Image (tube, rainbow, N blue to C red; front, side, top):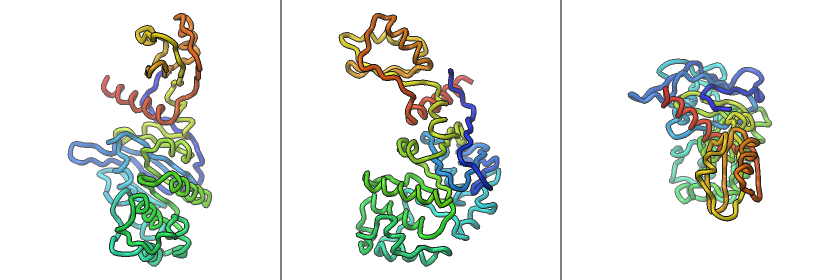
Length: 317
């Protein structure tokens, strides 16, 4: 099975009217086309991971969604209106990677300000507790660590009853415990019918958290479905085993259906488009693999396989 650049679409939990709609949206910066005729919809209750290599258009897509930039062509709607209007109505919260924090104030004061400004605000103490900030509520913002600052941004984004929460690398700088607490809160938000969209480089988070994964490539949707569907889309399986003695790399590279080969010490890692045939041929070489494991690709490996195949296809045109 070969991987192509055509879009794969899974159904997920797509019910009701979309909360986000991109219709033939394009955005360029000079000669660089960051978003190219993008069609995309998000629905209530979905937790959606937005993935893509550097330059794929993730940041530009989020900027357009939040009304920070205007498209050159096409239409972006949130809740049937403009992004700016939806934000004014208190329907959207966002956690961005940087900016947005006043420094010469206490954490509690900043969170209180966000609650005071939100048309459907939660109690300040509830917001602080939900973000894990109660113990540092009286600390000055400019005395916080990077992970603590990110938790403050999360508090500002969830100060009221938003219907869409947009997260750009939300757990950067957080320790493991803080990350687990953060995603527990996000699951609760989704169960209440809110749509969650997050861009991340932590693909294990996307695999564990998202019920829908969207892969962008050169400003277009390359794949769209559940994490399991994205893995299946890669069309390869992972084979890992140990070999005693000298490993003949040349012979291993002649194995049928080989997609990738890595050798580390006496451990061999293979990606194959037909694992059964590859393993059969391995024994045919007179080799005796020990600790043999055959499994589907992880989301990170599938992501790399899909985007590399799309790049190779474009280069061959």
